[in-house]
Image (cartoon, rainbow, N blue to C red):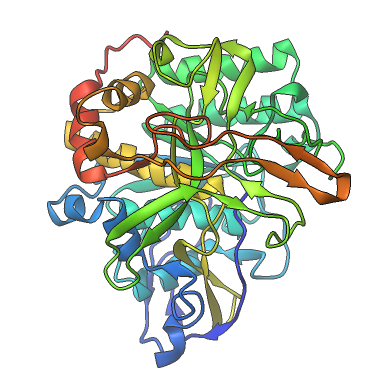
Length: 443
């Protein structure tokens, strides 16, 4: 889940063009903003403006050439936000209105489906939902966004989580060709039947040529806690679901270094925030490792660094709170914050947006992209299409428990901390269009 810094700045009035039914599009526009509106993470050099972020990842040249996601729809599976005080819970229409105005983006074409959550207020959004939405909109501003809300009660137990996510995936299949989900739980949490329930929904997505992207988790080489379990992390080595399923494109996390002025890419390392700097008192880092449930899929055969089991993640992008993209959150009145996106939950929607750009470029849905990703990774074009992350590790430390989970170091090529690395989209997008086929066998 994304974590953001909070510091208030003043803002002018924001006009929301569309009122909220759960199936109505949300448009956005902004009135004149005061001079102080760009304060906070941008002026403190704790985030990048959307254009800088796009430049760093090679997205801006595509937008300049008209590849902006038009004709594509990205589906975001989100937990419905219960009523609460802002900025923890906001009206996402107001957030988008401010975001679009401040960064000169077109009005977001957002629809929310709340039939699974039965939410009385479908426009209420958590910081996570706002983060996902604004990242997709910034990277693929021409794409439509459909949010499928599921009840927060789905996190009460592994059984309810498996059923809720599977239902949301199936509902999302009819709404868009790319689905992004930014939550995961340790593999050890689920029964064989629950794993099969998730896999069945993912098989349906692959058969419908829908790409599913999932964040790899924020606890490094340690498994995430179980839904409905103790708040404390179990602190043992493992990977998570749904991202460990071979039918998912698993997105890990990095710390991005780029020019604050232009966005020119300078480098990346494995995202790893040590306990002393973490707001939770233990390591926050890119989830990665090897599955204990799934054998190595065919597309990972022959990849150095892999073993007999499914390795995650497949790819990565920025997940560091101090180097994320600026996101806008409102307080429901006249005050707003700009804060850096964070967590592997930020990497997943970024990759979903890249897939949408490639779908527009190809003129068709890309579907199950993992074989193409690995083909590109093993090709002579790899270092042009990806930023290869070769420094850092996802070792996790829990000082309160005096436990260290030794992780995996980044290495040339694929590794179980950042996968193949982050995108250079201007090269990667045409290659994805070339190496994917609507008739590809997902098995």
